[in-house]
Length: 113
Image 1: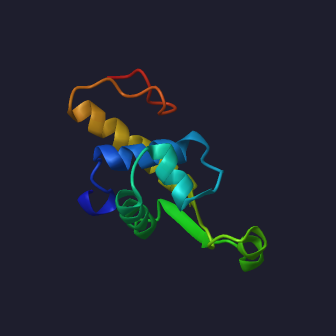
Image 2: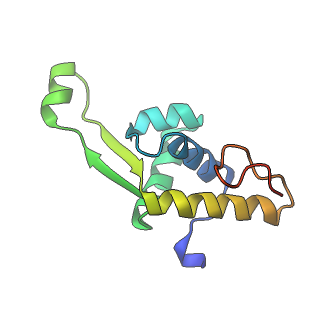
């Protein structure tokens, strides 16, 4: 399944943790960077990989919204339902392979080891 899942690095897990906190919520890139505590040069390539895998979908905001706010246009990201399920499983497997307790933020997986 190597082609079906990204490497579960700490940065990838941090991005997934943010996305899984509220799977239906769309978050813009800079917001994801801040919440994950990672720089854009780390987060955006992760998001691109997750989007290629179908785990994440993105959309550009309506141009009138950023023009009214006087700021650059935002790209919003959201984890897909299938992506959320696959992400939870992949993170849980990564923790188990290192014989670590699965983090409590993984619904359905937390507390298991």
